[in-house]
Amino acid sequence: MSGKIHRYEILEESALLPGVGPFPEPDFWSNEHPIMAICEPAIRAGQDTGDWIFHVPKVGETTSGPKHQIAGMLKIKEKLDARQIINDDRFSEEWTKRFKIDLADCGHLIDDLLDNGNENISTVQGRVTNHLVGHPNESKWFGASDVDIRTVANDIGISLGSFGGQQVAEIPDGEADRLADELSNRLEEEVGTPPNAVF
Image (cartoon, rainbow, N blue to C red; front, side):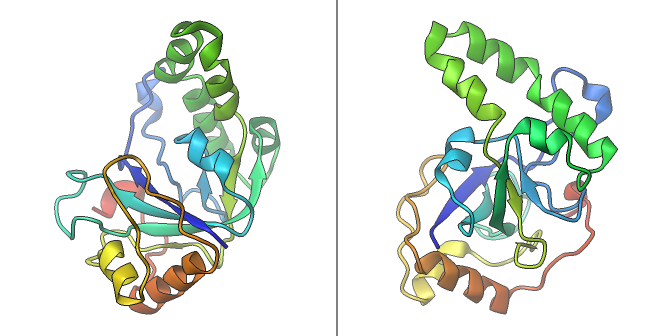
């Protein structure tokens, strides 16, 4: 299966209701199934079940570790829309409350609806679809690893291309599986670790 590398900010506080606390994205801690539900609707829309998302913090987001630190990898089990997630009892009441708040976050909703007219309506629609639910056993969170994903990829003959933007070019079928296997062999999984404690 194919894969994408997701360059991300470690935590974002909800602008709509800061008191509810940060909504981690990706989230490997709150529920049995890991999930990527809010950020990067374009990445989420382009992936299919069985594909991989490799989570790599943006440069400057971590206090230690290599430049392209691999923090986790999510193997997509299913794609759900927001209504399905809200009504799915696999996700806790507390998590679902934060999910609904973040979907309505001013920074997302108002800008997308008002900037550039109808052009951004598809962006709003994208935010409430294609939420990626991961396989609980095959997806892994490594936390503050000392492993550089580019180095691992080069070691097994996979080229990841440029890391200049939010994402790199898609990792082709088969190569993403090989990369995930190699990362699993080299790294220990962090289990039950809160997101603000791993970096």
